[in-house]
Image (cartoon, rainbow, N blue to C red):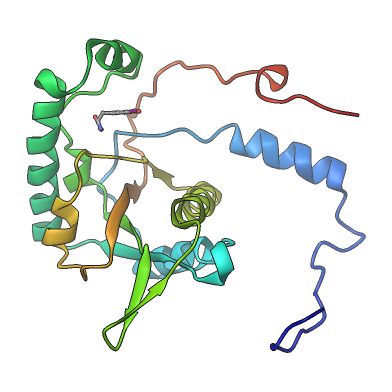
Length: 222
Ligand code: IYR
């Protein structure tokens, strides 16, 4: 193999004691209990937990291993309030004319509206930024498959949040360039997802939605 970098032996952590049959089924059953939650408790979550969740997200594969992501973890109440205010301003316009009638109809079963109190109540907001390029010493370095990479990292993050017994919401206020301003991010970053993280409120309700069956999402070519 043509490479300038040293290679090291792959450590296969899933040894013979792990049974793929059982693990795959167990993981599916566990992940099938994950729900997007909008009713958060204000119960604090230690920063150490958030740090480890972000470390897990950062293990995602990325184009040319460029790791084109930045995770901003916000627990500061003033910043959370500013984010809520700006998000609600955009969402008010979205729900009052910017979204199509079809879109509003599609959202009706989820019971969403322009009010986003969870942005203040959840103990942490993880704002994920993508980095289409890196800037070092005024020079631009291109990143590859940026949305794919950051999307996968967010998937890892959401799984880690569920594994930790916490809940989250993949929130996409639109447009979300206000996050760039409020968090004073460098010019090369673009807001990608806003993920409130915390414990569910004891009274949290979630919509009674169903997941597609396997034969609706997969085709096997044997
Ligand atoms: N961004 C809006 C609307 C919204 C859009 C989709 I697609 C959703 O799955 C949920 C909501 C909001 O956050 O309310």
